Structures are given as structure tokens and as C-alpha cells.
Length: 355
Ligand SMILES: Cc1ncc(COP(=O)(O)O)c(C=O)c1O
Image (cartoon, rainbow, N blue to C red; front, side, top):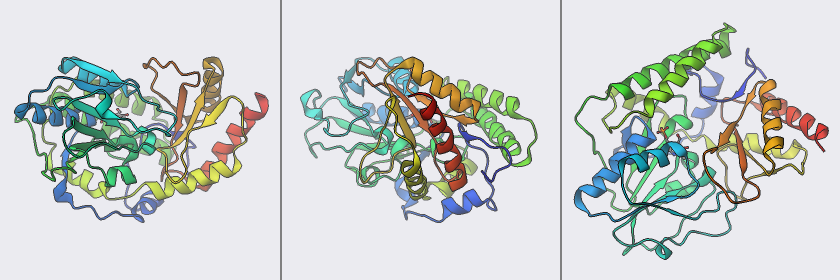
């Protein structure tokens, strides 16, 4: 790995325009019209704004969530709204499309999640529930670019090195949401500052070998915690919107695709994990699905001991499937082919030692 402090995964560090990672990301652009999009601090703020906007002019009976979903979103929806219902999804297999008409009606809202950028949706154009699609893990995927939903949103801090930021668009009506509260939200603004500090400190750690790891982690955790207390959907500061706009047309997927191809060519198969993927689609990251929790945990610990930090998606869900412990390892523009070779080498050592 060419960087000074070898590390793969976890949260972003601040990038500067001279960084090779940034130059790589900048090579692929999708010409979106910025006037079609509204920007928020977080994915949760964006979703609150969308639901409140729908509820302002419609009587909503039920809000439908996938039974397997990011718990920060499920917690938020359960806290703010009543009559929450759940529908079945197959988050690790993509052979069937969900039939929303089998469970919802015109007075409902259905939230569809684009799982790891591999989902496709199909539903009637009219005479159906309000549809909100979450493209956090599939930003600039074909499904996100060709959606027919009433509203779509994506949390962009999961995709770009920005402290906070999310985007909302309305493919069906083409009416820009622009629905903000005129109030102060110190929690979200302080969360922004803390996560911004952590990205700065992490940059020092990665690029300068200064030992600030505990500090950047602490401000990141504090920022994350404040974020979950934000109850609003205010308009971000102008400079925050400008920062989001400067990134959101940059397509992260071609580099992910290239890195994943390198991994898939060299990774040794294991009876302990399956690779979640779909022909013709670029997933959010390298997704490894396990059956046995102890084995899953030993793999996770092995990676961490080698400075590879995977994310467990999503631990608070009750899943009845046999294969259900999912790890995501980032393979984005931060990582070059050398880093990916290092990752594969460490995975292959574990595979060899765990037959
Ligand atoms: C799929 C998905 N949607 C939305 C969110 C929420 O985004 P934010 O943390 O910006 O509120 C997350 C993660 O936190 C997520 O994983």
C-alpha cells in the first residue's frame, strides 16, 4: 500500500485536490443537473423531510419498512411515526423483485432500500403507495439514475470524504423537494464539526504518520452519537451544500468495479463465506456473507489485527436466514491495486488456516 499508515476501511479522511485518490475519483463524472436535487445534512434528516412533506398534504395510514434495514433509519422512523409495518426482503439474493401492491395501498408510504447497489425495483406508475427509495449504497447505480419513485435519497457521507451530507430527488414529479425547517439544530451542526475534526485528524494519521488515531476515533464516535439525536431537517450551511455539490457528480463506481475485479480474480474460495454480488452490477464494497457467527467473528478479528476494518451490516436485525452475518470492506477510490492485493493476501491466509 502506498500510503504511510496502512489501513483499509472505516470512515473517510479529508482529501485535498492534490491527492492521487481525489484525482482518481475526479476522472469519472456523471452530468447531473444540480437544480433537480435538494441537499440535507444526513440521510435521516432527508428522510424526515420527505415523509413530513408527503404527510403535509396526504393522510398516511402506514409506513412500510424492509424488515432488514439500517437500524439508524428504522429507529428514527419508529420514534417519529406511528403505524410502522414491515415487509419481507431478500437482502443477499436478487432474483425476485418486491411486489409492493401485495401489501400496501394508496394511502401508505413504502420505503425501498437498494441493498448494496444490487437491487432493482418494479412497481406500477400510478394508483399505488408513495414510494421512497434509499440509494445510499447504490449512489449513481442504474437503479438510482433511472428511478420512477416519488422520492429518492442517499446519504453521501458513506460515498465521499465529506463530514455529513445527503441528497434528495423526485423522479416521478420532477418537483424539487426543498422542504426545510426554519429552526436551529445545534446537534447536527456540532455533529458536523466533530466529524469534520475527525476527518482532519484521520488525514494526519494516514498521510503524516502522526499518532492521532484515538483522537480521531473519539471525535468520530461523538459526532455519530450527536447525529442520532438530531430531530430536524434544516437546510445545511451554504459552504456545506457547496462541498456536497462538488462531490456528488463524481462517480465512485468505475474504480470500485476495477478494485473488485482484482479481488475476485485472486481471492481463494472458502466454505465459510459467500461473496454477495450480481452480474453487471457494482456493489457498495466487498460483501462477505457468513453462516456461523464464531467463524464470522474470528475472520473479523483477523482482519482488524491486519489493519483492515470491515463493517458489520446490520447487527441489530433479526434474520431467519441460515447465511446472515454480513461484512462490508470498502474498495473505493482510497485504495489502489497494491492495497487490494494486500487485502486479498490477508483474506487468503485466513482461508488457508480455516479449512
Ligand atoms: C442504507 C442507509 N440509509 C441511510 C442511512 C442513514 O444515513 P445518515 O447516517 O447520513 O443519516 C444509512 C446509514 O447510516 C444507511 O446505511
